[in-house]
Length: 250
Image 1 (tube, rainbow, N blue to C red):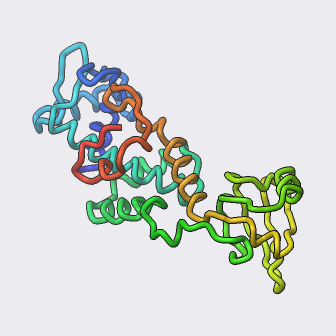
Image 2: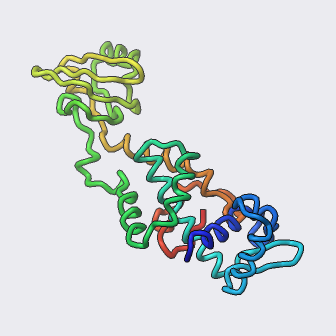
Image 3: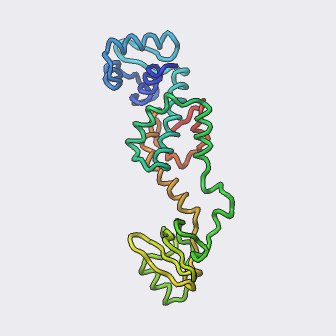
């Protein structure tokens, strides 16, 4: 299927206000950047192919086959958006624009590979990767979430004032030969003696899960209401629904 045909199907899906609500040809032409005459000709050709249904003076709707194709293409876009946002730090708006280009050149094999990569969720990693470890056992560059602080009351109070509390994100900047550790929490650095560093546990996997969760939610605006249905947060939907040949409901 050509890129132009895919764009007509996808744009029809995105512009409708309800699943069976026709999309005016003038609106479709405007969004695609083509003349209304060209849009009219293309829509009639797609109607002959059984992908669109044309209603005079009202517009076009997707047929079941057209719906399947549109959702297949959009599922590829969703995969690319979450990949670009989560792994490359690209803002959702820009990621959506890039994904719109990538979706047309993404083979089923690439979809499967991309899906497998994204499904390497921290929740499914080996247990050892999610076991909190003392800061004294970490190496420079490790990032995670403070899992526990087992210190004397005075030391715990000092650490709390510095932001070193369970749930805080931290990065190990340096580890000395004697076991002393330099970490960064929020916007400031904290030097910890080895005895104290041994009593603070860091969960390396948790921060990856937090990043995944945030990335999904930041992208959710692009996945809602494609079928005119109520919005569902993507984190509430299993990723396997976003795959090639699947009608992945946002």
